Length: 120
Image 1: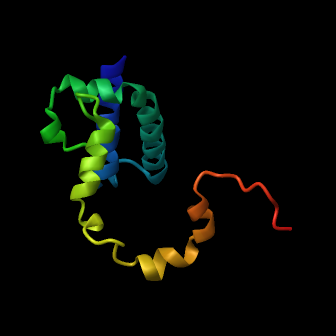
Image 2: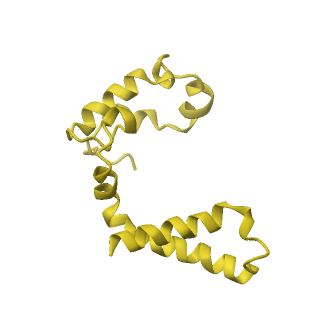
């Protein structure tokens, strides 16, 4: 059940994150605990949203743009992007030196249009 999985994840994460298990468990057992944690997280993942919802944290506490109770994910992402320090300058810092040399500007100008004539 989900609570048993959650308890197993808690215990395995404690083993992984705390150094006080070194010497108690040998290297092989520590490696097995890391693998078991990955496996348990995979089993628990389908219930992650329900588990977070069960704690009834308000959106403002979670501070998540995509995990919203009201379902307004895209609106929240847009608002967060507008507030981001990365978007305070147009173009953003580093655009000319880092990104622009890698862009196919002619392709971008065409947008989502397939050219009708081949240039071959």
